[in-house]
Length: 342
Image 1 (cartoon, rainbow, N blue to C red):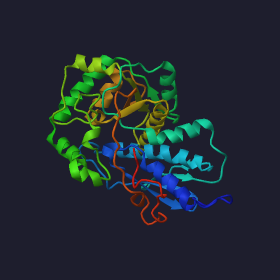
Image 2: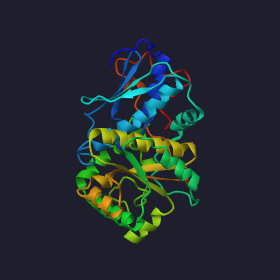
Image 3: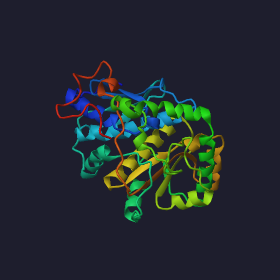
Image 4: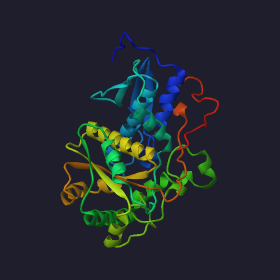
């Protein structure tokens, strides 16, 4: 990408704003599979393909969706810096997107609210409070996806969804290879060693309940009958994100759409979590699309509602890891913690 005549180089403080926003994005198993690369006024979002979950995510679909979530943070961060944030998508290579941060107009009030909600977004792998989400909030969350080619669908047939999630729970609970891989991303966050963790899923952020609250199925995850799973679906709200095709651009777009809805939910005082692991079972997505009458290929299931209790923060890699060799100084202002308080 060539530099435009109006381009103004990103200052170190601006680079820090972009990097902090990206670092706070959600990712599969909190692997944070991205890096930033700065070229004058351009910010490349680079997918770290060396981070791989062969059992959970053999095709790298969730990894690319995670990069889409990071892109959904990078774009509004550029806007709050009064830069236009025009995005281009290279067809090949590790760079999944480039945000051109040329000078632009000030962000509007909606953009500011959503940007500040980034720091309040949590992965809520627990039960929700009993109070219902208003239809106004539900409509606003669904409308926030704003990604061409991605449809956020409110699923019907919760009995079918509950039955299929129950089946997935039993499969993953009995899969020793999956359990070993999951434990690798949990073990180093536990106890004393967890104080220095930079990625992975802390024990305290998990749930000992069944799907959908559990999110990540472990050997001791309860497996209730299908009717009970269906009953437990009802207090929450669900969106299934679908695309027409199943290529890398669609995965990136789906990840961005999911995160925009999640941030909108956080701006409204709601919490949520994403279910993708059942979608990796052979034939699961096709059957889910058929039974739920979905308009395309399901890429992620998003559940959201009011929180019943607070969720602890997830560890984050230091910003110097996010921008290796390019980050000015320490990348943190004096009052900033060493990593995100997500």
